[in-house]
Length: 476
Image 1 (cartoon, rainbow, N blue to C red):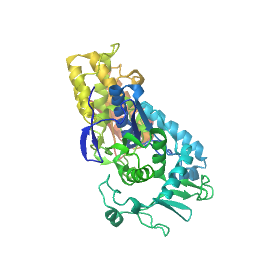
Image 2 (image 1 turned 45 degrees about the horizontal axis):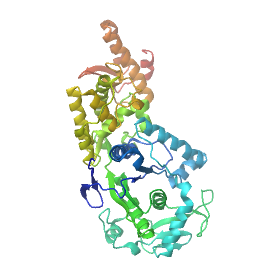
Image 3 (image 1 turned 135 degrees about the vertical axis):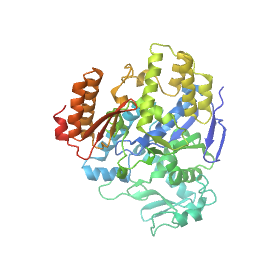
Image 4 (image 1 turned 120 degrees about the horizontal axis):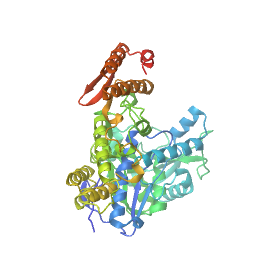
């Protein structure tokens, strides 16, 4: 059997993975809060742990792996969205949950074995909170219930490597008169009028964020399970708080044996943010509503994610997407109609080495160069690539307009689409060797503030200071 080695955040070291029960390997990954479309950064942990799920299923058998990923469907952000839109909360969460599943499906992510929603487990959360109070690890105050960090002080902060004193000194925490310690965190809070709420021994209210995952993981995976994953932004306070309340509620267990955290995502070398204008959702990429101006297949997004090790920051660039599309087109053309044989040993070895997906892709390039198409297909499918479910894009074409066009200075999807239509028309004239028509169109486009040029084999369209959409519209 293949030995999998994983980096454990809790121990700060790589070690061979030894499941508690090889007949039931158990993994829990923190899922989204459902109130809007998933942005590109939200998708990275989904793809990372989907690869791990596939690897575990390959090594231990599909029937011997249980993967749980939750949905937070009661939260301040959801309530705020309901207030802003006038929509019912359950409608918002139902719609955005399906959006998430659809978008992640486009990236080739398998659905977990269980996808619990927080609102389905309120009674279990109440029971766990009652137990924490009974054991002296939590207390009720003014309609709230808070976890008493001092009751777990010698252990609290071990995952993130912080001491309680340091956290108190540097943390931005809610200062409330009912807290015994500034670091005490909410397990239950009163529901305001008009907010969703449930009856409890402490009055009508709703759970805090952290208790959700502890209750759901216990109900579905038990007091001890193998792997807990998520983005490294969740390490503190969310995962730290999960450990505290779970270990205090169920001291007979270990909670999670291995903790795995993926690094964050950047766009063109910068942190993704709306203020920088480089923020986009997965759906924006799939539909072409981003600065690149072309529809990015989900398989291409997945490939770009896999090209960087999960514990390193991942930089999304248009150039990486173009190169990924070119590679996938080549591999799909090579393996069309070919029966997958067996995953290559070196590809499997790379994945088993703490999910070295970049190394695994390098081995796929080796198989491609060697013409070993059966192993190429089998190995790629282990990474979630080249499968039929992701083959519904234009890989059959030798070249694709999306792959050879670049758009500079277009943040508005309408203007970007207009520029694309002109650039494509210009390229058609050039391909037909109708250079007179091509030159005429280029000159008129320049007058309208759109510069057309060919740079390193790609058609580039750039918006100039005098960009005039009305003039361009007449050139379509």
